Length: 323
Image (cartoon, rainbow, N blue to C red; front, side, top):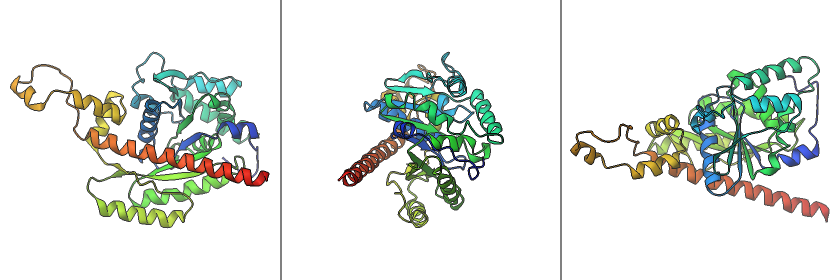
């Protein structure tokens, strides 16, 4: 979308409503955006926060990860589509977990983004429509998390997510091409700031670190810190590349900590051998689930801490301005 020729500044009321809205994005695919989104959401809801997840990816993978893809309430993005098109209050799927609601993605999301693209080539009046729609319900939540598609699917959804957000979290893999993907993300953030001056990078998450690969983690952090030049932190909490547990979680529609809790209750492996495999037909859960859960819990704590620190700094600056 061409952001240089037209500017529709979001109202102060919309910007205020998005003060706790976080977009998880990096442009590149396969860097853990959906996994990070759903695990953060489930952990925050479990800690007592009121959380809304918004899926702007037409694949609808957040619904798979949260176990609602086969739920009769899963609407393939229709709720958000209708709300944006007709200026309605969006109706999320309620209590996917206690305290966790979801505006799902799916084929309706793809249709909505196609409409945004068509409008951009004409008047561009729809730009910021997701922000204005979410502003109707965002104050009802402690935090709103927006999952985004890769740029290969088009930047429209990513820009709409940025327009609707105060903060951006960027997961990256420990490889040069993934880290370089931050450069295109940074350019998009700057262009979106014409319409949403408040949006900024909250921090970067290292995702998919090979187990015990300390040198890889160290090298990636060094390169990231050099690239960021103090703009935002690289969170100390890395997410390890625990393939078996990650796949288990996705197949079962569970967050990592939920999977780890279930793993802790399964019968010992030797007991199944003694019973000659009789009993539950459900595949055993990977023991690495606990490690993955620890990674996400540590990361979530650090993100909450950074959000609080940023908000306190903003409050102090406002007090100084008033004086």
